[in-house]
Amino acid sequence: MRRRMTARLGIAALAAASLAACSTTTEQGAVGVERRQLLLVSSAELDQAAAVQYQNVIKEQTPKGNVNKDPQQVERVRAITKRLIPQTAVFRKDALDWKWEVNVLTSPQINAWCMPGGKIAVYTGIIEKLQITDDELAAVLGHEISHALREHSRERASQQAAAGIGASLAGVLADIFVPGTGQLGSAAVGLGGQVGVLLPYSRLHETEADRMGVELAARAGYDPRAAIALWQKMAKLSGGGAPPALLSTHPSNEARIKDLEVFSQRVLPLYEQARAAK
Image (tube, rainbow, N blue to C red; front, side):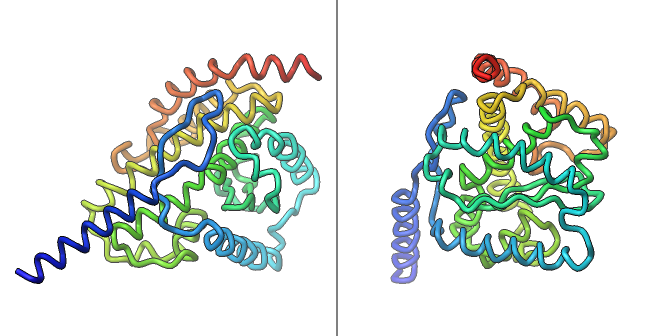
C-alpha cells in the first residue's frame, strides 16, 4: 500500500511539474502558431550543448575538405540567411541576438538543419540534387530556423525526459541533427512509446516549422509558394519510397503540400509587401 501511495505521489509530482513547465516559446505570427509546449529542459543548457555539438561537426568535416568548399554556394546560402534573420523578431525578438553561424557541408545528403541558438548547416546534396532556386532555398532555411525559434529540440528532449528515456542532451542533439551518431538508437524505448509520443510530436514540429518558415520567407521577400514546389520535387525524388506518415517523423508529402498550399496563400500579402518595399 505504501509503495502504491509513493508511486501515485511521484506521478502526481511529475504531472504538476510538467504542467508548470508548459509554456510557449514564440509569438503567433501571421500563421497563428500558439500551442503550449512541455519545456522541462533548460534552454541555456541546450544552447550550450548545441554549440559544442555544432563545433564538433565542423571540426570533424574540416580536415576532409567538406566545409565551405564552394565559395559561391556559401555566399548564396549566407545571403539568403542574412535576409531571413531580421524576420525572426516577428516570432521572438531575442533571436536577433543569437550567435548565428552558417556553413555549407559537402555531402550527397538532401539535408539542412539549424541547431538551437542559430547554428546552421546546409548540405550540398539539397542544393545540387534539387537544382534548388533561391525561393526554395529560403523555404528550406526558413523551415530549419523555425525549428530553432520554436525550440523543438528542447521540447523533444523534455518529452524524452518525461517519458523516462535516458539520453544526454548531446545524444538528443546528435540524433536530431546528425542521425545515427546519438544515443536514442540504443535507448530502451518500446515501439509503443515511439509511435504514441515521440513521432506524432515530431510530425507536429514539422508542420509548425513549415508554417513559420513560409512566413519568414515571405517577410524576407521570397515567394512562399516555392515551399510547395520544393516538396513536389522532394516527392518526385523519393519516388514513393517514403515510409507511411504514421511511422515517419515527417508528414507525408501529400499532407505537407496540402497544408503549405493553405499557409503560403495566407502569407502571400506579406511577400507582396516585401517586394513592393524594395
